[in-house]
Structure formats: C-alpha cells, structure tokens
Image (cartoon, rainbow, N blue to C red; front, side, top):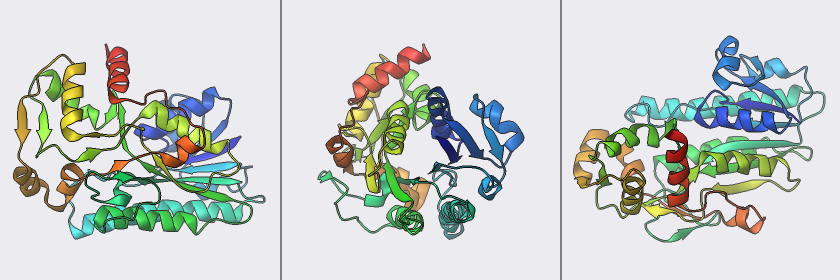
Length: 300
C-alpha cells in the first residue's frame, strides 16, 4: 500500500515506519523538516512539509499521529488550546488531502488516547464505557470528532485510543528507567490508579492489523489486555531492573507541581482492548513483565 503518515518522526511514528517498510509498503510522511526525515526515521520515505503536497500521489491509507506532546509543559489555558489546535490542524490537513486526491484513500487511522475515558477508578473500561468529563477527555473527544467527520462511503475512519507506550528509547520509560536503575524509583500517590500500557511493537502491529481490515472503523482501545495499577507497575519495573523502589511521591506534591496535568499521573482507567481481542488480534506482549523483560534485554 501507499500510506501517508503524520507524526512519523515521533516515538511511535518512527517504529511504525520501520515496521511498515519491512512489510513492503511505500511510505509518504509529513514532517516540518522533510530533509531530515529520512535520517530520523531510518528507512526510505517520501517526505513533504505538508499533507497536501501528496495530492498528486496515489494514497491507499492515512495514519494520523501528529499532535503537540501532552507532557511538554504545564497546562495553562494557552497550552490546552495549543494541544487541541495542533491535533485538529493535523487532522483537517489530512482531510484536505483526502478531498484533493483523485481517488480517496480507503482508510484513515487516527490517533487518540486512553485519556478519552478520564478517571474511571478500578472498573473495567471497554470502547462502550462512558467517559468522565475532564480536559484529557475533551481533548481526545475533539480529536476523534474531527477525524470521524472525514468518513465517507469510500473511506472508513478508525480512532485508536492509545495507552502508555513502552519501549527503551522514548515514552514514559525514558525518564523513569534512569531513576529506577539508581534505586530511587517509587509509586505515585497511593498507587491505586490504573495505567493502561502497550509495548510499542504491539502498537505498530495493531495499526498494521487495522490497515489490513475492511471493517476497521469506529473506536479501538490500543492497550495491552492486562493493565496494571501504578503500584504494580512500580514493582514490576523495579524487579525487571533488579532494583528496589522504596519511595512514594505524595499525590499532593504532584498536584502542586503539575496542577491540572497531575490528573494524568494520579488517575487512570483500567482500559481493555475488547474490540481488538474480539477481532482476533494476539498480543506479543500481553503482560507487563514480558514487555519489560524484552525491553531490558534489548537495552542491555
């Protein structure tokens, strides 16, 4: 397939490009620095500064992952608007491309996040679960709505609600591993909040899985089938590094330091990949222990 990818130079996008290239697909990526995209991604790609620049190409599918990183800085009102605007602009740019193509792509896979559900306590969360209204939910809702508005009879749209992505060279493990390796890791608050996670390799496999399906539309939870609490995550990460994790960061300290953004660390959702499992997807890393062991083995 000929696939346009936004967010291709990011933590997930790079791995996705490498995986899809190995599968024999032709990749067209949108990058603010197209001259550097090939070196960053590490595989042959056609890079352009804007999605519309691919209007003269044949495009079979689009994967839309672009957006301002949610943890870049504290959530002021201006930063909240920037987070929303960056996602909506990237999605609208994709929509403009699809309208300009002689033949529209058959599929758009657009990013979203576990934050759609907001704080769900300990109850199991599937794609049918009603969300808790907070900023992370509103951000994801607007992003998904912008993508779903692009659906036509010719093009299906699937939104993937992505969990915390794990791998050795990015995501949440990049800042955590050094602290845990020094033996100064610990849980956040009471540690009861659920952390839906996904190994980066499984996430790119999920995207490939959906690209191959004719019925991939609507929303799909992209998290491992065994989410864990923060306390469980802390214990498992420490064990994978053969280090203690004796410390606790009080929830009040996190709230004071991060303000509203602390919701991302102190609340969570026990998100399950119900639709993926029903569709027959099989995870290479269904458990956190297996995922972290593989990551540490590769990092050694």
